[in-house]
Length: 443
Image (cartoon, rainbow, N blue to C red; front, side, top):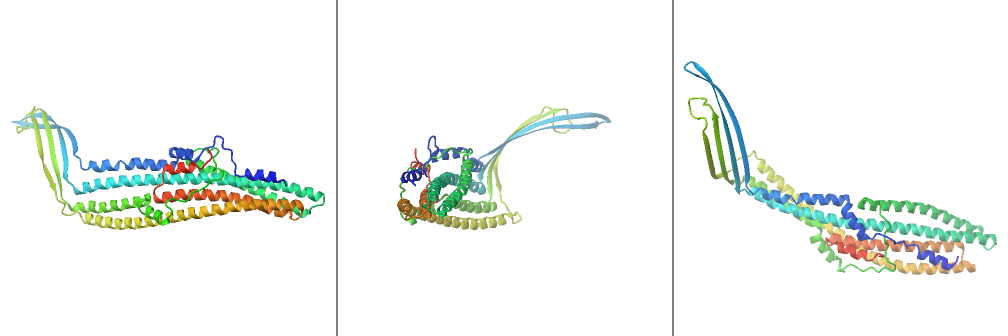
């Protein structure tokens, strides 16, 4: 087989047409607008932001307006003569109640502010998860494309080798074994091509699930990509950051504070309450008198009241005490959840850091293996032409080089993804980090 043909095939294994290709940042912005999971988190943020005004409302006055209209009918008998008497009483009252001391309401307000902060932490975590999910789906598509391109290039190379083996057999310079071996490799490559095409469609469907529409062509990595190690370079620094800044940890810290406030709020059920109360009323009576007594038709009366109202709970059937015990148990649960969240964040940071470190080492090793595999292929081709190598040697060398290039691309994808996961575990993943990854793609 001609060396120039193989060189051309190998150079085109991972080349993808990038005309009108979408990059990672474009897909992320489409996901922000269309991803159902993130849309749910956005709606939860909007709903959770209303907790604070609801909590503060318990400290504000309550104003109410009441009105009534009452008609009274009476059959009155005086000196043996009876008559029907009736009147109508129209009244309205406007009242105001301003809490002066309600400890439970104060604690509810403090809780509501913590709940808003917890909702924001959940939203920020959802945004970071979206960055990782779209990056994972993006690079899964690139890896599937690489696998398909590898199989197709290998099939093309095997086709040429099969034709060469058949020609050599016809001129009696090779055995039929070479032809059978090349045919077997070709049949296997065809089966692998079908599997690779199916896997590519599955990976593209995963991107469609996030952005809400079929993705177009995706921009690949630039040739000769150089990856950099994470900064800071010490794993413990990332672990310490994850313990304090991971959004899962922050959310559980807020949950613990909310649980502690809940204990105080329930204990406030034993505390007295003091309210300022005021009211203004007007009453008008029309009609004929029903008795010889009091109310004269056409009477109008106005009344105003203002004062303070004290309430002291004495006994509530042990309900308040039970709610306090329940809140204490929930506080213990929240503390355990916080401890677990810290451990999960630490483990995630360690795992991602080691993934980046080992990925960089794998990339360096596979780059060296690629050069060695290329040299081995060329040596086997030359040996086959001069008769010191057989067809299976060339096929094995081809397969080794194609597999090495595929594994090298996969190692690069995994290293970049682990870098994003590391920043997500530390709670510092931002859109600027996606922009840096996007700069590694072909424009």
